[in-house]
Amino acid sequence: MPARRSRKARGSGKTAIVVALLALLIVLGYLAYSGLFTTVTVTEADAGPFALMVQDQKGDYGQTGRTIGALRKTAKAAGIESEAGCGIFLDNPREVKKENLRAQVGLVIKASDKDKVRRLPAEIKYKFLPQSKCLTAVFPFRTKLSIMAGIMRAYPALQKAVAERKLQRVPALEIYREHVSITYLMPIVPKEGK
Image: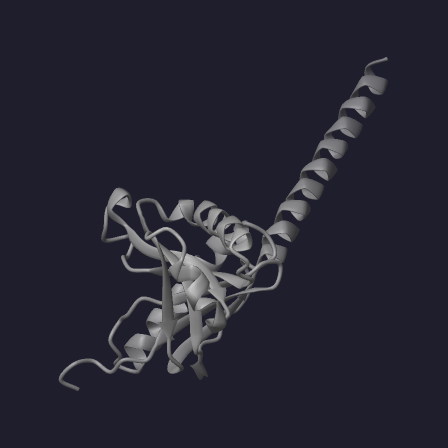
């Protein structure tokens, strides 16, 4: 009898190890699928022009998805087709308190819908960004975790490129094409006095 118990104990120990390894593989697979291990390459490219339907947002950047969702409903009701979600994040969360963070959040739309946007409530604005030379990084957008992974991977690469090229640090435009990609566009602005 004691020999049987020890075999059962060994068997259950092996099962626990296999289950733990499978769980680890699933978690690592999900992280990889979400893009956490993606190498980010920064390039220079012409981007735009962009027609945007935006709303000012103050507070936690984590509310961006809800703001975009609400604007999508408003746009649909007004007959405005959106091509993608977007955000321009004006403050660095490492330097500004969460409740004071400022952003312009919204949708990439057709320029021909400008008048429809202007008929919406005053807090929703039309914004046009002309074509400009930008530092560009593209990250996969496969899960909600992709957004956080993109922030962790793309911004350090963009900041390194800004420093290497001796550029002025400016807010980036993030364009979210769900289940496809997040594109980070940072206009190239030479440092003043350079």
